[in-house]
Image 1 (cartoon, rainbow, N blue to C red):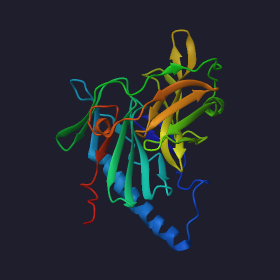
Image 2: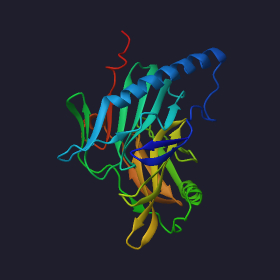
Image 3: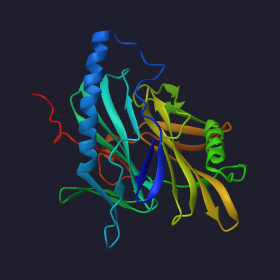
Length: 283
């Protein structure tokens, strides 16, 4: 699927709704989940429009929202939950991402899980109230070690991105019992983009998932540098648990568990905001 964001062509992956490693539901349960997924999609679209994200500059330059999710997900191993991944761009380049989701069981709540993809501080506004201020950079691009030069054509660069992403591996450590598990990489980028003003020749956002729920995002970019084009990568969490990422078996990124007080403090690049005003819990 192709979409136009801020005048820049973005190629989004097809929606993902069911993973091979998820349990098979009976037909009755399956119908209920289909109905919940459809209801959640509309709620998530509405929720994405609720928060206006902008830079912390004098003009409060607003980021551009793609109104449709680039990825739809569920995670039946933890309950009946359906969500979508939405992106906000600046000059065609992703600057923020949010996983917006609706719990049906065992909880009854709706949340907006936001992560800055910008080197500049971001602000989130609900109505006229500032409810999130990312006080530091949310992402740090580094050169991919020993990577080939970016290819001349877009299809060839996509092949390179898939090869490079496949050399990354992500391990999650459970917040409660310390158990570890490997995340599954979606082999196609959920977003493809470019930004001439920001010297991005080509870029792709890849997702490491549990079920189909994105837990870590891998950004790969062919950037124009003073010495010519080169491949760069950056990683971002989409969960408050601990993660370790390796590239060709060498650790390149690790983050600790974020305490709930930090997750909810509205000043970190990763934050969890409520959307219960859109879908109030049933009493």
